[in-house]
Length: 164
Image (cartoon, rainbow, N blue to C red):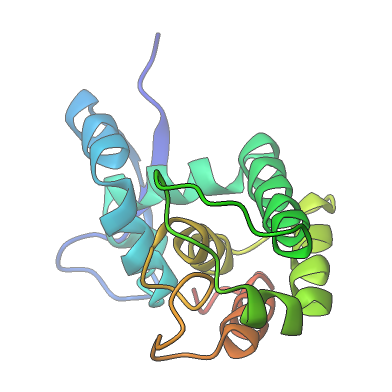
């Protein structure tokens, strides 16, 4: 199997130039093992072309299967918030009040993830971090950002642009 081709910025190049680069096995391993760190970089607006692992991670975030899984997880969160609370010790409890207050926005986010067409890696990374980070406003009542604001930002950042 041939290594995937990714677009990256040359080390000493101009910011508007990208070149094709064969991703090495090391790049692929880094993209998988450091996915959360790479997602945080993408969510903050680092261009996917900054490195081969970032480009590979951005590509993975864009797959329809991955996007569908995120959309389903959001719908599961909404369902769980609407159900009577059960005591489960093995996971971080939802911040139900915030989830229910942002239910409409979360439903819009899930629908957007299920929609066809390209989505920006920045927004998809924000959604993933919202779901997996126990300190996100989805779970933590004293999070730095309000859940509605975080969802609105993710929705806006799902719009593809070349400004990364």
